[in-house]
Image (cartoon, rainbow over all chains, first blue to last red; front, side, top):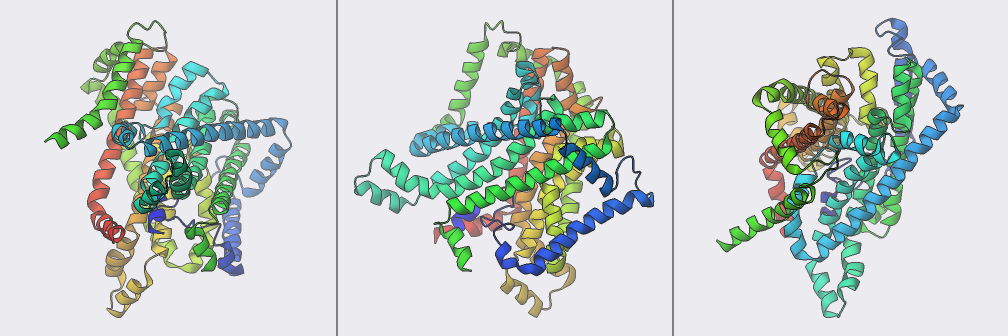
Length: 283
Length: 258
């Protein structure tokens, strides 16, 4: 358990056990009701604020106006194609980053000398903000989807790689030596010793990368203007369609929540055999 | 002695190889977009003079620092409040989760509506965008305070500020720091984005202006500087973290070793 805990330095800090989602069953109906009340309260505050004159309705339209704009958006083909573009860029970028991150991570883990050789380079490249690549993406690809992909892949690759590296480092030496003395080859040891050890970390990396990929996909579309929800938001702002802009912001938020929930559910499914998940079911 | 040499060799080896590869492969480059590394470095020296750093990098860093500091203070304060009460936590958690899930850069257009396009807008964008990881991690950290410790504090009569300082914040600090680390990378992203969208100075502005006027070596040198900045900030963060959480890392090592 302790070792897994270290893996989750991202979304919710060093807790392998995701606080939301999984605990739903334990939370009971009261918690769910309170949560709904909280959401309802937020909607109410946004509805009332513009009417009180504290905030101009030009800047913050009431909930009802945003809802209307949201429904209008749902009726437009442009919205659905933008949503599709965003999801496609997200999915392709994430897939490329995950595969690359796992392959590179396992390779570095399997060949010990690579670890010492690459660590300084990784430490240097990782914190480079991916938005620094925006001008380069514009020059190379203009407003094509590749621009978005360049940013998405760069940002999410490091999330996966770093977690995989934590994971392969965590292999129990006794298990590894046992496998060796049973005559398992390199490949078999990667498959049966290293991979199961690293899997919880890999899943943490994938979960983190999934949300980072969405952020970068929307950012790229917002700033560069490549097709997608981000571009739609900047267009709504330019044409002063404020309620529509808020509606689109809400959509991106819901997308983010959905991706989080799906990632956590996948994590639990894939790791259902692992003690960190099993333990929770028993508790 | 040989150990030190070996470690330095490992640390410098690959970067040197990559640097050389970049240098050689672009040495005779006539690709307009990929100028020789030599040209980029020469431009770097010419462009980022002390004056230019003061005019463009300083405002960026200042906004980053102010916005990030606000996010951390407000995030921890609100987080302690929300995390201390089970009812408040249950009520607000879905709302907070939603706000965290909104990709922070979409805040730029929203906050531009309220705060215009000046200094304030950028600081607010940075503060609001990087608030959520700190806030939610603090909530989670405060919630998970060890119950035995909490009861011990109570029976020793530790309440109020003392309890907050010695128990709650201390126990939650590993989580809070993890949130702050995440918040820092969001803050850097937002610093750049807000300057790319609307600004008259700043690092993001300089880079995007260079790209728009096809001043390619200048653009590359800006990207290099931004990368360097990201690296330096993460080093500073790690230094501070290692000092502040030395007790925690030591505890972890001891637990793992046993």
